[in-house]
Structure formats: C-alpha cells, structure tokens
Length: 456
Image 1: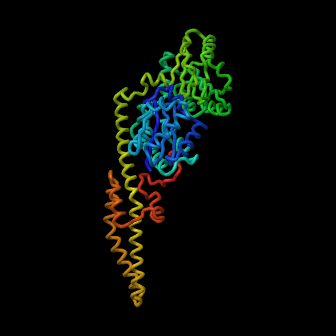
Image 2: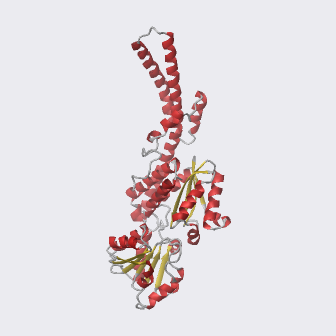
Image 3: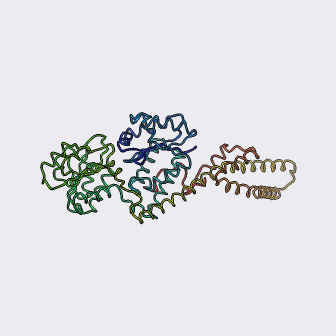
C-alpha cells in the first residue's frame, strides 16, 4: 500500500480559493467517508487548517486515486475541477512521506516554524481513527511524523524562530496602535483552541482587559475565566467593538461575524484618533474585508498575511539556521522511515522461510524416529537439537543479509528472489501474524494499530 497526498495550501492557492475548499465539523467527516468509500482508496486522513487542505490516502493505484480525490474535493467545495486542479499538488510514496514530515515540523506553514500544526496533524489522525478511515499505513506514518515534528521543535527552536500567526498578529497590532499593547482592551471571538491560544498570547503581551464572545456562552465563560477576563453573549459583539482596541476572531462559523456596518457604528462611538485593529484568523472569513474602508480601522487576515510574505524564511540568519537544522532532521528521518519500511516488507518472507525450514526439520525428525525406533529419548533430543542448530546457522546469514539489502532502494528484489528460490508464501497466517507487531522494524517500536497517546 502506497501513500498519496492531494492538497492545496497558501503556497499554491489564493486564500479565496482555500476558503471555499476548507472543511470542518460534519463537512470534514463527510469528506473523510466519501473519499474512504471510493474503490481506489483503502485509508483516508484529512488535514484542514487555515492555510491548507490536504487529503492523505493509502492506495494501490496512483492515477485512479488522484482522480477520485480531485473529483471529491471539487464536489465538496463547489469549485469546478478545471478551476481547482491548477492549484493542487500531488505527492506519492517517498515524496508524500517527506511532505507530511515537513508539514509536522512547521516548515510548510505560512509562518514557518509555527507550532500549532503539530496539534492539527494530531487532531486529523484522531478523527480518522475515530471514524475508522485510518488504518495501519496512515496511522504508522502519521504517528512517526508527529515524533519528527516534536523532535524538530525540541532540537532546533524553529517554533521560536518562526512566530505563530497569533504572535505575528500581536506584532502588527503594536505597529498599528503605536507601541506595546499592554493595557489595551481585547475582544476575542470564539472559544476554540486557536482562540484560547490567542487569549494566552495577549495575556503574555500585557493585555489584562480581555472580553470573550462565543456562541456557546459556557465555553466562552470558561476561556474568559482562565485568562482573568469576562465573557459576553455572542449577540453583544457589536456593542463590545466600540470599547475594543484589538479584535481577534476565529470561529469557524462559515459566515461573517463582523460586518462593515457593525464596525462603522462602533467607530462613531469612540475617539476620532483611537484606532481599531482587527485580526481575522478564520477560514472562511469571520470579518467582512470591507471594514478596511472604515477610517481608523486596520484589518489583517490570512490573505493579507499571505500577500505580505509573513513568515518568510529569509527574515534573519538565526531563523535560517533553525530552518536548515529542521530540514536536516526531516531528511534524516525520511531516510530512516523509508529504510525501516523497506526492511519491514521482507519480514513476512523471512518468517515464511524459517517456518518452512522448521517444518522440514520436524518432518525429517519424525521419519527418523519411525525408522530408528530403538533410539532412546536422550539420543533423539540430541539429534533434534543438532539438526535445528545446523538449519539455524545456515539460515542466519542469508536472513540477516536479505533484511539489510531490503532496506536499500530496490531491496524488494532480494525478498522476491527468496520467495522464488524456496517457493515461499509470505501471506500464510503464521508469517503474517508473527510479522505484524512492534518488532516489524518501524522506528519507535509502536504497534501498527496503536492510538495517539504519547504526544497528547
């Protein structure tokens, strides 16, 4: 089974298109199952964030699967295939592994090095596990990718070199407001993980007056209490705009939460020289882009961040060094992963060879016992031990060598040669069951079917 990824991101598509293709909630679950049910797809996982939508699949046939995923992305988004296809990228087998590892490390993010992507990859895996669309191949690969991402962030400091979208937003707010935002009043709309991170970032920046508005009041209250702020009903957003200096919205509502008329009314009720900074982290937009026409208002959204090159990898030397170190980790881990996968593919063949040899030994010992019944038990045991030892010694070097050779590109030919020479069936129940476990050779030593628990 091979891994295929079909997707689009801020690197290949305008935010307006990403906005149409983005899926969440029930729509994400439906896309998962629709892709999974296609005859050319065995496993499915979808990563959908504010700047990427990627469908990962385990497939047998490349072209048929690419066509199926493209067709379903078009159907779910309402974007015609001819309009969608030019913005899609496709990675297969080794390139798909490398791409997921780079994504998990934050190397493919709009703000290079942002740490939130690790949690988003983990959430994608969990959803696939819960919905039954992730099997051995994607589970194994994604758990490994999470470990690679964690290693990159721990060893390189890339998350410090590349600030998160929220951190960048705070820097821009300070520029607009004319200095540090400590003492400012902030309105946070939404109470999800991104909103919680926003509130925590604002507190660290010295903002002590934080108002949280959420469709579910209790969740908004919980977030507000965690940062020493206050919660308001979602319907009071328009009223709270008038007193805010900073507004950050990330609701996933799929519709406009703040309109130009709401902002214009809020600005009429405040000092003429008091600017308002709005940060829209939602996809689709929470805030109407037309608010930019209101005097004194600055709106930063994902599209404007994309156009201004926020998170560029060339901002400073220290950042470049961290990124280069993370890239080296990715290259090293990709090589290790692929080597282990290739070596693991030969395991059923080796098991089948040893099982066949053991069967021959037992059959011959049985014939010997029938032909020489006068042999006492001690003699039979000694002969049996000697024969088994000879067979083990004869098989040891070939099996060690075939495992080593199989780890190299093209190594499957050696396993095929063994199967042909000894007439082996690596799909026998014994060969499969003995090869299917933590000892399969995958780095990390986790069983293939394990749930995500060690990185939560």
